[in-house]
Image 1 (cartoon, helix red, strand yellow):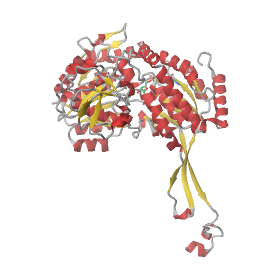
Image 2 (cartoon, rainbow, N blue to C red):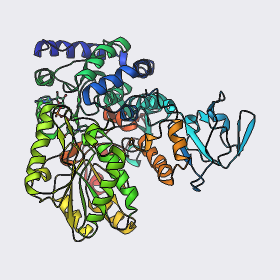
Image 3 (tube, rainbow, N blue to C red):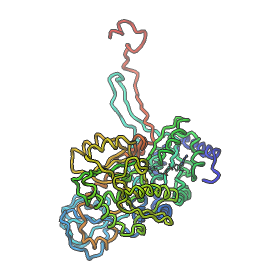
Image 4 (cartoon, helix red, strand yellow):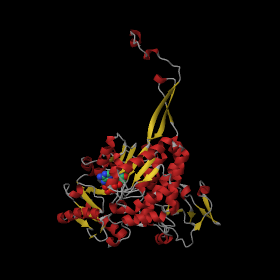
Length: 582
Ligand code: NAD
């Protein structure tokens, strides 16, 4: 569906889906589970095509596609080897990795692991044994090798499907709540019910994930759903239009391709919930359309995400995390990408140096030629970013990068120092590979700077000062926060996953650092679906991920149930003086 899709056709689609919804078909656990399984199967069976579509749309490095959207990456036989001993030096493995047939759970709680004929004496760490598929048959001490295809961060979309499948029954159950003396005797429960017919409009920067993830929530909650992917990510949009109907129930789930006319035609219809991901500008249009039918909505918007860097930090780690958080996710074209840094005047030069070194280490001396950096999505975004860059070229704030390649829509990672607050780059969401650094005398005072701006989707702080951290969490308002890392609350940075092959591990001599180890543990936050993802103020309203996705697409019906005893005469007129006294 796409070309020639007008208001009449949109009305037809909405009516068809409403009819199906009214039939009650989508309400059963069986139907919901079948659709979720079908979605997971679609991802499994089309990994290469999805990765190719993402590459077409954004020149997204395969590792990034793999980590952020789909699980396929044939080269990623092994993702991590972690040294949990902290000794940092281990013998080089010269043996082939041995695949174990036993299920990983078999090892839970054991003090030693049988691997082939050997035993590894170890007090090993395990995060989640269901993810361990391969173990290196050498007594490295404590080495954990996790094969990529089964790693929980790797396919956010598939992982969301599987998580919903696992939890669905529990989520659907009415939740008993206490009753009060005034209703005695009674029982009370909250019954989740699907809204009905929902519309999902998604953005281009994670075009697969941002389309599928809300659809998972909509289906899990028992709705029928229309998905309108972004026309900017053309290949992913047509992949979804072509493939989704082959897997899921078409009388309940539809894909409508198109741009403003098609989105407008859809928005004219009455929906029971709208889930929109994109800019605040269009968010306002969507909200205005929703008002007409009093349709509730979730707005997943963007904004300028600040990164505060204290001077007491481990600067090398900070630089790596900022670089991968900014450039390792679509070259900064991510809603929670660091948008600007605030640090102290005294610390800024050191931070700039560390960032420069890390950038060069990650992307080489000629970052425009790096295959580890996505390109800018299209020429209009390239021009928008170039205009910001040109303004800064005149102001002389560029301290690193600044090169551009219009033909290939590439802009080098660029650092800008002491950008004035009235510069365009400090007024709008950058959504690209430029990173301004502003300096202050005292970091704590920058809380006011952040709070004086529209509320960001994410705010980051790097510090060892727990008091400052506490104050930051308490004082600064943002959709979400991450302390001592960037972007990891939602997605997994690709540089950590650079350990993509045994050769690479060998190169490291298994000195996987504690930093990696920490990052893995931090990374569990992503698959920790107990954290909602969403904005506040200008960065959006409502949230999703995990249980929050189910909730976003469910009405929580309050049901109070009484019998016929427990009459209280005082309730009923006439309100005699005696009753009033009581
Ligand atoms: P966008 O607002 O231009 O487009 C988003 C969707 O809205 C697309 O499907 C598009 O077809 C549709 N659309 C565009 N104009 C429309 C109109 N006039 N009427 C109806 N529909 C219209 O956003 P984008 O450029 O795709 O995405 C970038 C923005 O999205 C950034 O601001 C970013 O921060 C934000 N974003 C937020 C999240 C999040 O989860 N909070 C995720 C990704 C991107």
